Length: 361
Image (spheres, rainbow, N blue to C red):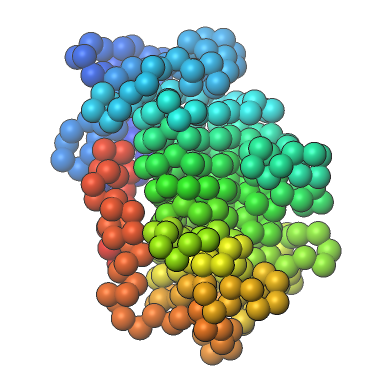
């Protein structure tokens, strides 16, 4: 294994020899492979209990759902319930973390080795909401080094790999692979750091307040006749403090994309809000930048903005002229969509030890 970050805010080691990890009550638990997480102040990430999921049978559980059912209701002060999900494809295990399972920490062996995959889709009779391979609703959920897949394919319509309605949920070095509607950022505050997201139509969607930071976004080849709008944000009330902020990310074509028209987003709901900031956009982005949902729906009420992006796809010369589209020139305006301002992240991300940029670059 080893997941590791050289950023001084986060170090995550997985060792091949037995070792120990301190848990909340001061006891020690010996693991075949262990994790040590250290924040930049030298304090260990607080862990209150540890279990191992192994399909081979050498852990505490053979399924992720059984491990996730183990903890009782908890809060941040007690520390994370730590679930080490060992390397395997957990094929067709549809995982749910319900709202009463708070502060669960899923650690995988990396996105090439720990994979949770399903194949539910609208084309096969599921609703978009219920098609998700993994559903997370428990506050404070943290996942590191896990791939979430929906294998349904581009012809099956909406098919979600992960749906998160968990407040204060964090995903670090994870991968989300699907086609239409891959990642459903349903609600509440969410943070994604150094993740890979693959999809076709509306593959980042929902109505959370969410920041993607240092992530790679890969539009894929859809079915014939479709274009690829990356986002479909669903804010339906102008008073909601929700939206999608894409900060210091890279938008590049997946290997199969070809010449498919690719857009930064389209408005799913009337007050849709998306901001791209200080990100690299490759040549796949259509010069218009954004696409309509249906005629002139939401074009005057949405808030779509770009700030200080780079790359051949970032040229704003021929962008849409909608009333709701903005080119941000004032750093103070862009700052409203940073981790610190948009998510109040300085008050809760520190306990995860996941690295993050609080403000603008």
